[in-house]
Length: 243
Image 1 (cartoon, rainbow, N blue to C red):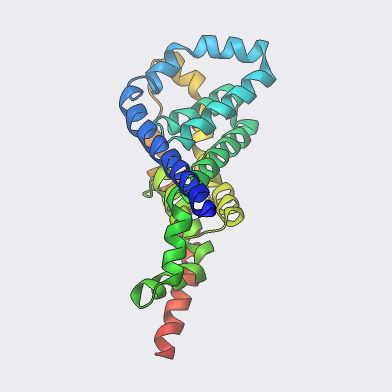
Image 2 (cartoon, one colour):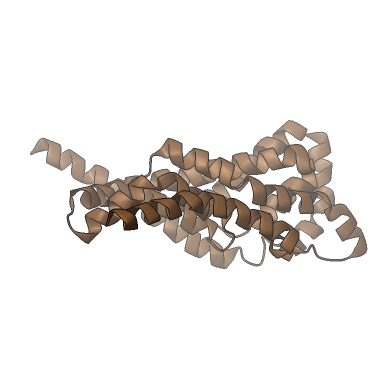
């Protein structure tokens, strides 16, 4: 009886933490949508550069922490944050700071989602039978491929790619590795765009954020996604032959 009485508040607290994160994501998305944008970066660029020059290490730490919190709570502005990383720290080491922050933030929301609902849902799927059991087994057999596909294909929202793995029992280490490696191509593209913002600001223009859909960028990304999907295709063909 005592164990049940202790586990109930713990379970309630874990679910409450997930509710809080989702609530902050919704409220923050509405409240910050007009503040975390390119215009705000352009308006404060001189202040940011001056602060970086005076306190470089503190700026790096503050940037990574702010970016991680932004990703962890699903707040808008991840693209602007990536551009800011390039603008402040150049393509390199800016891309390292961007990847580190995005991975840490993604791990944060993953842990909260798994504690709040994911572990229980995964356990129920493991104990289920019929179509649900087969679905879970299929996911377990192809976790690496699915994780990399979600990161490499530009149409999958980052917040969705952070939550789904936690709900199907993906191990944290596998999730962290696939996230860190899978976001590298996109991070390089947007960080390099951010590194050139000085000239964009001087010309009074806005950066071309659609560059990731340009053929010379999109085709290599789709090629990487195709390589990630190839094992899935092979497994599917083998399954058909066995049937």
